[in-house]
Image (cartoon, rainbow, N blue to C red; front, side, top):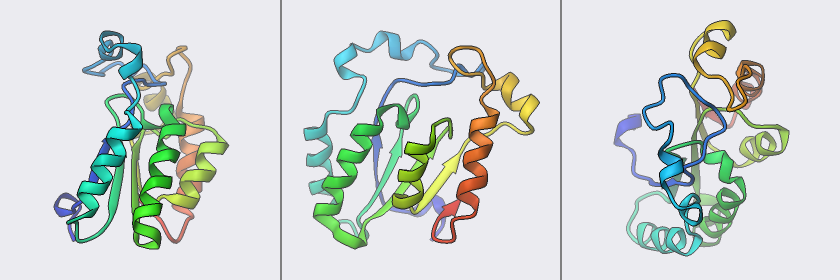
Length: 159
């Protein structure tokens, strides 16, 4: 099945981001969102899971974000736990991410995600110029470490 034809429920998990990309079209979007609304409400996510799984041919979830989904990692884990209760081992999990996260998150992703897409902007010097961290440092070392890790996972579709 082509990537664009799949059926999954997408969770826009967070409006926060840990990078300060120079071309971001929503650099201050998170500042216009009330703090209590910056992470997806769990009850809302569960209601969506139940409705979607009631008719979906494959129980599949995708984590996405207006910022970076993994900045709300505890909520990602909670949604995953609820999805597993509903779908069991049939659950398929996708993550679209900037890849800027540490080993704890990477371990979870390695174990629980079937499909991972990491955005990168080329060689480290170019990537770091385009995608600095919120603190102004380069992000490529962390991101490419995660790329190297996930590309070796034989059970994961990675791109």
